Image (cartoon, rainbow, N blue to C red; front, top):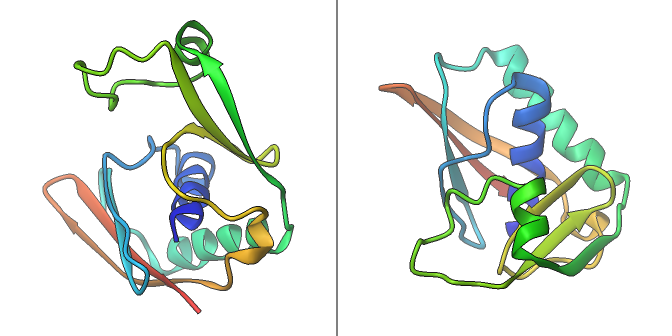
Length: 137
């Protein structure tokens, strides 16, 4: 589920031009991501995002974990969500083939093909926040 969240975030960046989610709640059965966005998604956009995530899953990209210096991480990633009290000198970066890379401490699959079928269960929009609820089957 956590690996699917990474792919969803990159699909949102690539297809809809928004930033990665600012809040996520990951559960084995059903998860959600919240994005700063200016409107609800159309049915076509929901289908497009869901299709892109499943395309990446089916591509069976390797998931590689690497350590990176803080200086390198600052050049490649937005580290705004890292708590200020964290004085890390190295970051753990998770790469999903050439599709996505993100600093992360979560548990991940070895390849995207292990994730299963991604389904957007519902979306909601309120006060410039787009919520996407998803599950895997």
